[in-house]
Amino acid sequence: MQVGRVVGKVVSTVKHRSMNGQKLLLVQPYLVDGKTADGDPQIAIDSVGAGIGEEVMITSDGRFARERLGVDATPVRWSVIAIKDEERKNTK
Image (cartoon, rainbow, N blue to C red; front, side):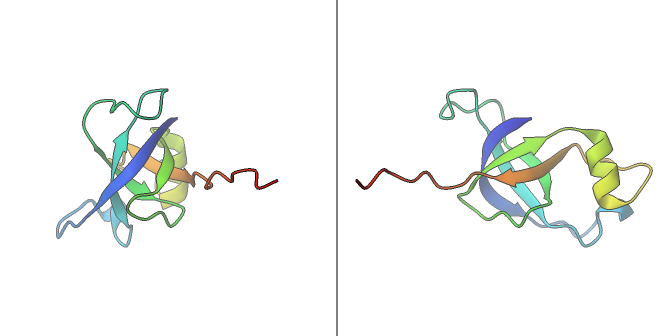
C-alpha cells in the first residue's frame, strides 16, 4: 500500500472488459514523507469515490482488484482503497 494524491481523471474509449463502468483516476504516489513523488503517476480504479486533489491510499493487490471487479483475471494493477481524512487542528 502507498499514499498518493489524485491528480486527474482518466478517460479510455477502449479498455479491458473487466474495467467497463469503472472510474479511473491518475494518482501520484509519494514516499513515506508524503511530499516527495515516488515515480510517475499511476492509473488506478476508484473503489471509494475519490476526487481530484484528495490524498488516497492505493494498493497493487491483485486479489483485491479481482474481487472488487468480480472477475478471475484483469490487467488492473492499482486500486484506490481509502481517502485520507482531513486533519483537524486542536481549537482549545
